[in-house]
Image (tube, rainbow, N blue to C red):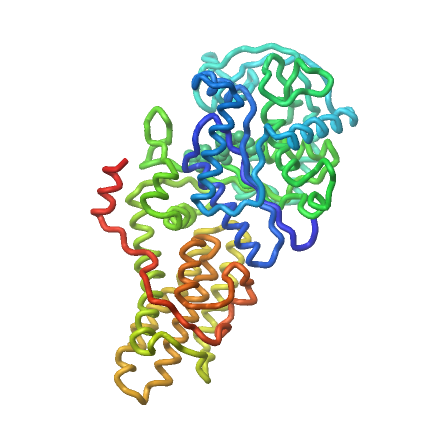
Length: 519
Ligand code: MSP
């Protein structure tokens, strides 16, 4: 990986069903990181995409009366459009049915085979079709139901290619010992280490009789197991085949963001496969928690699946993004409800942030006709100290994927702004012409504070940050700003704001009622 490059990925999503809040969550978190690191001046590669092979897809297509190809072509659009609606700034979108990916999977397999790490054997096991997982006998009880989803398993016996994963038990344990943040958060790291200590089996990597998959080279009766196929997308997306400058610049990925349910594939099988092929493992795998809905597990049968399109339409993309990132510490489980979203957004975005900015712009309009320049004496110890503290904490939280905590830091500035308005009472200062300089200083401080807030929140709520930037009347382009270089007081000489419009009007109970009724 080149200095200054930053490769971040989301899981590739199954297209057997339309997107829900879980998909939106990981993608949004990845987007925030991508935007943040671009602001830091890094060259970011942000990859997302869709997982289009496997039995699950075949079954969903059959149920819908479509061919698998027709189904995936239809559903992929739902994901692509959602990312547009959610202001997701990915650099590439990979589909596992693309030629570039199919060739990468086959070449990767050849490499493993050339190294003597693949053999043909027979697989007999209990298979869960919805989860695409074989379960070893010793993890099942007499009922033979899937430990994950509880559905009845099928006993399957078939020829299969195996990857000699067990050979990597020791190297993997060593890798974990050498890199204590390889898996984050720490509780997940410990979980995987104890799993590894329990011993590894070789991994079956092909299926017979399942046509909807990547064919195994020279053995067309076999297609690759969907997880073997899917994990390799992270290499296909940076042109592993050509070992082009893109691959050298971006690999190893800085972080794979995944949900806790798919951590084992990413932190055991995937680095094992990479070690086998002689490719460096990713630097880090971060596993986030799961959303419940009003306290319940989200499921189609319960009819409580949260449709991200609906949330965006009702509350706007920024409120949705903000809520997901602020409500729950990244890594823990969380609960979604409209009430929680409204309360959180009203309190933080309307009453604190939006209010501070709005008051500022209104006062500027009223007392200074909307224009103001950098005052002669501007440095103030308290403000300098506050900004210094916010920057340090914000950066360290962002580096640890602690988005909620990073946002709490930012709001310290908005709070300070609101308190400052109350304390300085510009409406009093305006009464006496002798206070003109003081009034200028106060207003400039508040505008400058609003500018800094726009920069800090840009990765999280890019649309509102852009509107605020425009309202402040700053010529320089927002997403070409750099942090920390621009995070200093007095960076902009002159503000020439447009008319103030509320950034986040409060959502009232009546609005909520309407949204619920509309659903
Ligand atoms: N196709 C695989 C991933 C392959 S990556 C090489 C897959 N796809 S998925 O569409 O089923 O799930 C994708 C992600 O959505 C997972 O990270 C999963 O954790 C996440 N979520 C699914 N339901 C979720 C919630 N209720 N809450 C939060 N995230 C959830 O797995």
